[in-house]
Length: 563
Image (cartoon, rainbow, N blue to C red):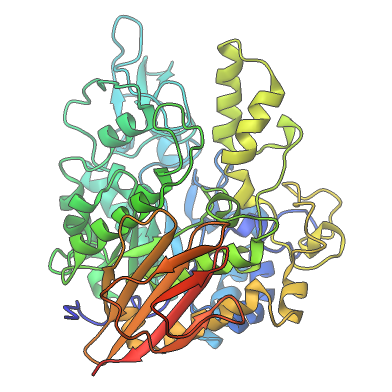
């Protein structure tokens, strides 16, 4: 029992992700910025935040909202200056809040000076910083497609060949086989770590090593899975990550988190095994695909046993060897309460049930701004209101295919668009939700802000916000919730998720109703003693019983000493 890996600070905390563009605007231009974050640190500290992850803040033309970087050691103009960054970091340290930055090094912007030089000629010193190939019969070098649609190749007239871009054409892929490029990346990482940054979340890091020879993809009709499986886990990815650890990370006591698209439980150990000396954590995607049809990407119902299976698989893969993460929301996913819960009648119950799951699994929890408020998906009524480059490209594709009905497209976008997570943070019930004084924020504010906002939530002792504050505090002080073994007690139940976390000293039992219906639930035979209620999201939760009546989206956590 309790076959743990070593104790580390980044296992005992949780990470709060901020999307700076949407968090808080301090200079009235409708765009969130670094000073806005600095002004909000007391709010985050009160919630219990100890680690902040910032989506990219570096200089960028914003073709993909900062994930296209033109200068890795300068701050994006809209977000402020390096002095603003230094002030923000200093204020975080005063409050004992750590900071991790988004490291985007699979690709750069095409406006980065490396690429501006590389595209000039085939003998340019920066040429080999990127991936170039000759065309075939006047067409692209292979059949690879961009994650955002269309060919993954763009023609460069000056050199009469093509460069690879797995994302937009303004995001050319970097050539990690070039030692000079890797050296520059490592120097850049040390620049930020020496400033006092506490680590990195590494964007699409499994993509940095390309398949040898760049072979055509054999498409099966499941486009996303086909391309992800082709682009991830290339032959040198572990060699590169071990070098990064050796050259940079080993010298600092920091958190390293890999965005693990294309990484499955069977691959997990290779990335985060504690004896591998690569990354601390991998941010996996398996559960993010459970409610999407693999061929059409259209929403389907989440089958709870499949979610349980994913969690079991990852727990088993890393037990005693490495460490997991878990999340339900980020800047690339629709709002979790709208997606996995119910965001009207049972918004409180389902949001707090999901929070209970997030903070009681054996993993470092990652939560996203506004999750603590139960912020919901919005409703887009005009395609022009969509900012997401994926959605814009997809609409263009629909039109090319003759599907020209905006209503049909908006119906799809209103479930799947990444813009749902990116609507401005709802601070209060003043115009534009207190996010900005500008009459035109960069993205429309959700119209439900008069009722769902941080000011209202903090004033209401029975709010989602206060539940998050409580469960954050409970996890922080509980060794069993952090390091205790995980066991799923009822893997096939379609509505109820029951698991235990235990050490030799203590057993914590978690019972979650994932449905909007009342469920009469017979407790598994393994449960002989529940103990006392540790936390629950209904005020009259039952104590000991052979069976329990679970209210819609009810969460009950019990704690008992081991005999």
